Length: 411
Image 1 (tube, rainbow, N blue to C red):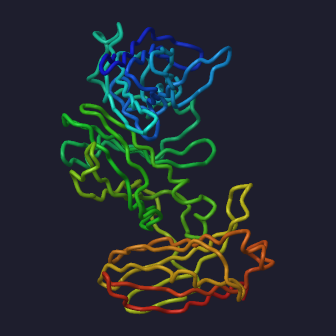
Image 2 (image 1 turned 90 degrees about the vertical axis):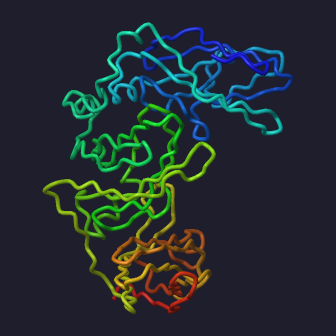
Image 3 (image 1 turned 120 degrees about the horizontal axis):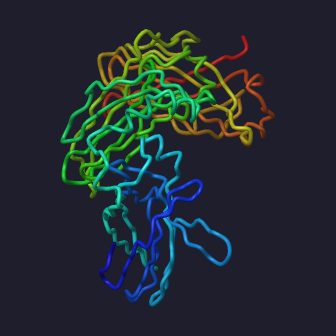
């Protein structure tokens, strides 16, 4: 696979075990330095199988009698190591992969001074390569099949091949809204890179039923030249399902988001472009009612609720607001740092800062730190009577307004 700079990586076998396809490797290091090898990590992932980018291929090394699953395989200078890259059957089958015709594997090699060398994707062809049908979209056939839904316990609420995105050689081949057996919901985007260079595709500005729930970058995924990637946007992670009711979201009627592109050096090669996936026949609205705490020059803010963090181990709370911008301008709204108090006591928290375009509505959340609330004898949302903070509104770099807002609860 690789033989340069004193480093030699050899693929020695492909084994189908009980739960995964396992690519065995031998790594020889005669570079003059101790090196760490990474493949398939969040920091460097350019692995693919049969033309689809995959993220679960990870490098581990057998040590002694046990199997230690390290993302880093360390090889001292002058030594060798045997390693394995594993691809779980469950993830491969959902891509429609029931035989491996080819793999592309990339390695990140780093020394003790954190100098990194990247191999780029290296292709391996198996005995199935010559007869494999690359012209058929096996992912689309599988993800929409009743057999796959029954086996893996999900329901496709919506699936479309509408060509909603085609920029700079990157195309959207399909989109789908999936609901898992645990009730969680995800948006699946099938993107194909037709260029001759690796492209990083980012998702941001995610809105559910017309309500922006995640304005920042949610994901950034590498797509090798000529390859496809399934971008998985977990809508139940973007906005906690326990809060959907307070915003009147009972089902997914539409999802909009922005797609952007960067090259391997991190330079923008295509600006963000917004797309919208609409589920036919489903109510795509939200509930804008609540306690109005601000209404000035076309900007309206509504207090919704204070809720406990849904995680069992957490004692944090969140204050939820809804903002609607009908000002005719793009505004940036946020809280004045350190201005928030709960029941008259200054409280540690993490506030918000969000840019709202004209006509945009968004969820705003303020994270109230549990230990700070407890010091002020507040252990549940029902004990919160009043929250006060200072709102800052900016038009570009100019401060348009500063207002102290008070929210009364339980009255």
